[in-house]
Length: 460
Image 1 (cartoon, rainbow, N blue to C red):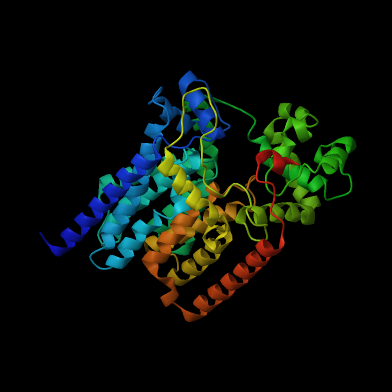
Image 2 (cartoon, rainbow, N blue to C red):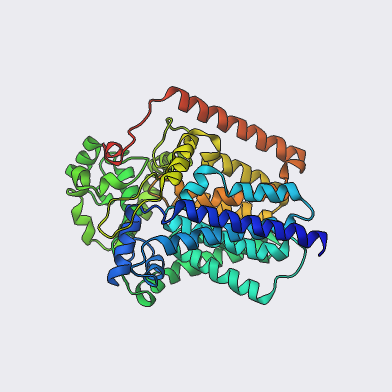
């Protein structure tokens, strides 16, 4: 037995132990409101596209077995990806290999991976794919054909299980397969456009999901955000009374779009939009962006600030991992007391900089500049920036879980590339930007009042 094989075997055993312990502690997994709805679809065989139906279809293969099979999948892909990366580098960088496994034990990150959600499904699938490819790439060897096939299937699932996941997957693939920026950009654009065009066909024709109207959310959110910031403009599609009521009730929230659909707020007033085809709403949004560019920019930047968690109060909601499952009639229960202790331990981390997506954006930008997009680390940095940049245009809620993959990708990229040892000018610029972000975020959290900690409270 060679020394390298011995080290890799130990990493493999450690990853298996961590997988087993995670499963033992967190079974059967936490189910959220979204999870319950998807499980109901899996049981009834009636699907819609409010959430990507591929997850509900997969869940239907384990119909009647509750959330446990999905938790097994999420934790298996999580530890497979981390274990493969750690094993690939352990003979040369043993401390870095342990750091890779440690990333999987960061309390709030693992705390979200055990919630049965499309975000955790995407993160697990992407992480497993990167781990499989990294097993060869990080050892300087060509990837076996079956490795590409397995990684391709996992990345395809990741791209379909979250509506905006392609903005992370496309640059990841492009940076892995191409060396020149021209080709990288072309591949990224082509994969993104092809996936966005194919996803509705896959969801509706292949997976049999009915349209739910979810496609209206983004357009309605931004149209309303423009309407409350400018003098009345009939071209936006609202009546004067609707705009007045949206303003009076404060139904445009940087945090999320939900007040616009909630009957207790503006949902009843705007119910008529449910019959308008999404294409017509986007046909209104496109010229509205041109006619009111400052209002549109203000709308998007307010939301991006919220979801990137820069200038926000302490305890900005939907960051702490769940401590209990959503009440339901399907027997989907809670993990035990050890899991609850873990989640409670993770809760105070929500104000730590590692839970601010903006911090990881700065680090990923510096990492990408240092690596010039080369290697597995460069691809991970590009994936982080691709998904985070998409929130500038496509995002209607500020949940931390949407950022789980970009943060994991950047953290792993930092361990693999050690970019702080690179170009000093880039490192200094990155550190300066990071210090500025930490100061701004720290001042906000020290001076602003704690917001409501409930969904209903955030609606008001």
